[in-house]
Amino acid sequence: MEYQNIELLRFTTAGSVDDGKSTLIGRLLYDSKSIFQDQLEAVEESSKNKGFDYLDLSLFTDGLKSEREQGITIDVAYRYFATPKRKFIVADTPGHIQYTRNMVTGASTANLAVILIDARKGMLEQTHRHSFIASLLRIPHAIVCVNKMDLVNYSENVYDTIVSDFKAFASKLDINDIQFIPISALAGDNVVNKSENMDWYKGSTMMYHLETVHISSDHNHVDCRFPVQSVIRPHTLDNQDFRGFAGRIEGGIFKSGDKIKTLPSGFVSTIKTIELNGDKIKEAFAPMSVIMTLEDEIDTSRGDMIVRENNLPQINQDIEVLVAWMAYKPLQARTKVVIKHTTIECIGMVKELKYKIDVNSLHRIESIDKIEMNDIGRISIRTSKPLFYDAYKKNRQTGSLIIIDEQTNETIGAGMII
Image 1 (cartoon, rainbow, N blue to C red):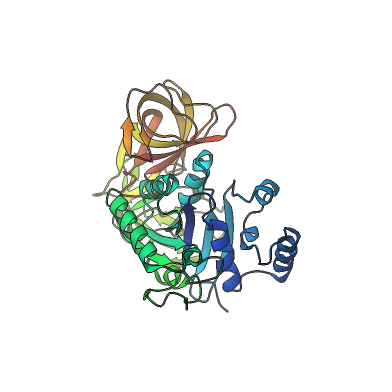
Image 2: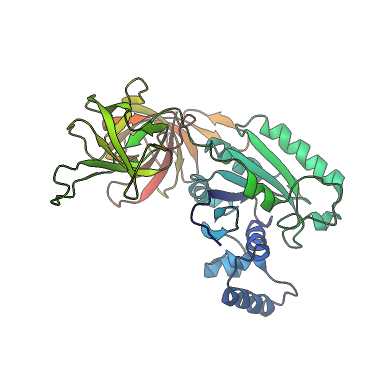
């Protein structure tokens, strides 16, 4: 099977504790034949030792010893699998409130969120929280899986009630594409194979939707953004004058012959060539990693950005950010931090804490003096040099940043530029 040029879909699981996220991923891996024999034998042995008369599919993703002992997910577990139609990277994220930061980490690069709801319990606080975070992180697609349908006798009424409850809540969110699927991860209904127990459900299985959901237009293909990661100077006899700019395109479509502007210098030039894996190509678009050469000798280095001359990003040192706080130590005003945005790294000062969001009611909590771990709040930051950015809702790549502790070099916050 040739998996080289198949599209990659990143998806994350979200939902409350014990609603079967790890079991669902285990079922996907198991039914799509993506598990090695030795892994299967180890899980069969482990399930037997626990006294289960069935295969505990959650053990395929819960890798930490404490996760297996408690039967909960604590850290983000990434699993890779592929089918003939697509490659997948799945982030299994925790359901507990105290691990909200882990959920943000897993969801930050996802094309799609799988939101699980236990059919017996319906919408819970964590369903609201995780759906809001998925919306906040601008995940373009969502599948709402009503799980454990086998425990409510595959009742269509139970499913319909949960779907209408979720739709009422989702009307306040910003998720454009939501699909609903009734499943049983444990029994395998509607995960990879169509359920014989729910003939009233006429939609597709979860795997079919994962394989066919349209994701190629999720990137911003309008605003051209190419943050320079490094300058390529081979210094070989054949390429004495070669000067290429390497990086990943974070927006738009670049073609050889296009007029461009480099930031912060503001110099204008023309794209001479675009190279991908050593081959010259006519055009490149997000999220391709390429090398560009320009017609003119312009002093451009890491942290600069190549854009179209009539379509510029925002250029500013004062930025407003929605931050998901990840550190044990609370964030306070006047804190000095390191900001990493695209390929720029610079010092920043947190000027003001505006408010934090109650993720269950979606209300703002004003006049705060700190933002604590797992909180999401709005802050203003002043950076030591200008950033070239777009609003997060316009471009997830140029609109996001990470906040790093100056002393420990630890990532302490994830930010979305407003």
